[in-house]
Length: 448
Image (tube, rainbow, N blue to C red):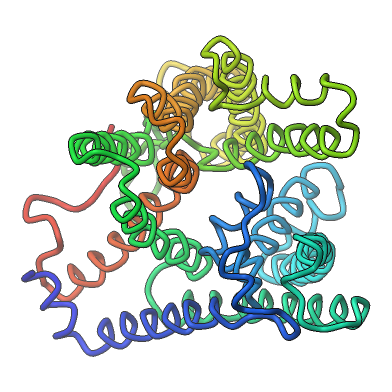
C-alpha cells in the first residue's frame, strides 16, 4: 500500500498510470459496441460448437469476438503481422538489411507491418462474418443484404483493430508499460470474474474442488514466474583499455540467456496448428456424416476425449510442437554467429573459450541446453489445466473447461509476463525518485 501511495505522490508517474487506466477503460467500453447490422440480443447467446480457432481469438480479444464487437479481432492481427515480419526478415535479405539500418529501417518495417495488419484484418473479419451469417440460419444478423453486411462488418472490424493499434502506441509513449501487451492483458483479465461467477451460479463444481483449483492456479502462477524470469548468465571478459593516461582492466560482464527466450510464441503456433485439423475434421464430420472416420480423427485430437488413452495423441503432438517451435523461435531471435562476431569486434570473450568459431559453438551449446528444459516446462504449463481437470474428473463441466482454455499456458504466461514487466517499470520510476519499490529487499530481478 505504501508503494501504491508513492505512485500517486509523483505527478509524472501518476499521470502515466491514470492515462494507461483511461485507455484500457476505453478499450473495454469499445468491446461492447457491436458491428452495425447485428442483433445484440441474439449475439448474447452465440457460441460455436466445440473448441475452434474462434475460441482462441475470443480469449485474446477479451470476449469481444462472440459479441461481434468492433474490437472482435482485438490486437491479434497486429501481433500476427509482427511475427510474420520477424520471420520474413530472416528469410528475405532486403528486409534483413532494413532491420540493420537503424531507426529509419525500423520505421519502414513498422509501416509494412501495419499494411500487413490491414490485410490480415480483412481476411480474418471475412471468416468471422461468414460464421455470423451462417450461425443458426442467420439469426445474428438484422440486415437483409448480406453483401452490405460484409462490407460494413469488414470496415468496422478493421477500423477497430487499427484504433487499438494506435491506442497501444499511445499507452507505450505516454503511459506505463507496453501498450499492446497491456491491451491483451486487460482483455484476458476482464473475463476472469464472469467465468468464476458462472461457475458459482451454475453449481458446476463443489466448493472443495474450487479451493483445490485456486491452490493449483496459484502454484501455476508461481511456476510461470520462475519460467518467465529464469536466466542463464554466460560470463564475459573484455580486454584492457586506455582511460586517460592509464591502462585499465575492463569490468567483467555477463550475457543473459532466458530460460524461455521464445515466450508464448511456441504455444500460440502449436495451438493454431493442432486446432486447425481439429476444426477441419469437425466441419467434414458435419458435412459428410456418412463416414465416421472424420469423427474418429477429431476425437483423437480432443484433450477431453471420453477414454484416457485417446487423449495421448493430442498430448504427445502438442508437446512435440511446443518443443519444436521453442527451438525454432529461439533460433530466429538469437543468432550465436552474430553474438560471437560482435564480441570479437569489441574485444570481448568468454573465459576459457577462444573467440570466433569456438565462441559461436559454445553459445549454441548453451542455448540448446537451456531451451530444452524451458520448452518442456512450457509444454507442462500448457497441458497442466487439462491434467488438473482430468484428475479431478471435471470433463463434463463446461464452465471449468472454458476456464482452462482461457487461463491455460498461453494466457497465464501473458498475464504474468506483462504484470512483471509493468511492475519493473513502475518500480524503476519509484527508485529513480528515492522511493521504495514493491519489494523492500532488492528489486524485481531475474532468477539466476
